[in-house]
Image (cartoon, rainbow over all chains, first blue to last red; front, side, top):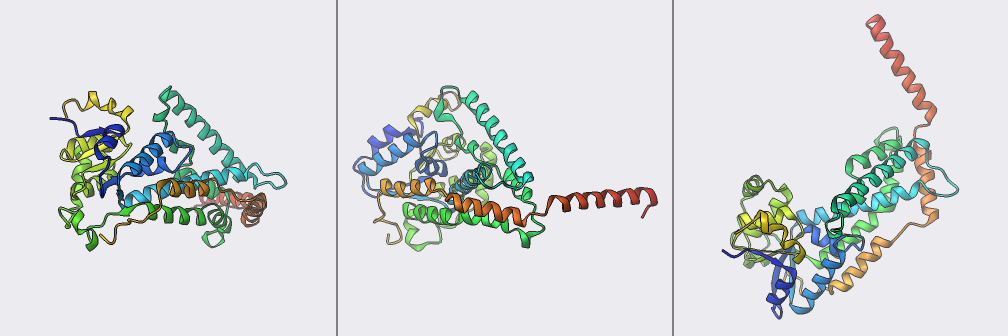
Length: 268
Length: 67
């Protein structure tokens, strides 16, 4: 049996000239495509531009994917914003908050150094998300602002107002322009589905079959119930799961990553 | 097919707008105002110390007197 994994270049050749090419795009592709600092930015954004110039493409995704994209950006805007508060001239942040932010900067520096060591020369494998604070770290910073109670948490609310509000809303609008969200309940999309009564419990069995994350299992479950043939992703677990659990579909990934699966998914 | 966007802008144009948002930074003045608001709304350090002492005393009383 031939593999259902396809590199970017092979895919471009296969779909050149195609009209009405419907495909699913995963959150990590969207994140990489729109973030110049992402380790896969050039690779992914060049691919999407080439794809768009050689075929008439409709990008589909799910609301879970949108949530993942916006969550990444939320962490990014908050991290960059908060870090900029501790190095202002003319005004000093309260000592407790400054100290926590300093600790977080140190912690981030350490994990980035560890990641550099891990990937070595394979820079495309660098996990860019490590640049940004995790939710537990954001909570620590929020607590360090020492508001008396939620009603008086004006400082943190102002942080969100300044760094997030407008940025996230505008990003969401652009994402909405770029993508179509798959919905089995939408009559206009009826022709895209093999089965409109999606069994979401199947996502649980997909997740437990290969150990993939639940949000990936949700997108794979949706993909399996559609007539769409292709999913674009950078995610190792999703590529693995499509190879195992959706053999009649194709997963499209960077050419350089195809080799990663030759050993683990031999003959699949 | 009416619900599927056919007339969206190109990825290049959408990306340009995305990158503009990512690169946008608040002004120095906005950041300074924000720090002032955070500082003004934080519980003063003295108050925290007093609270900690009060909690310590309370715990001590419970241990000593079973109150």
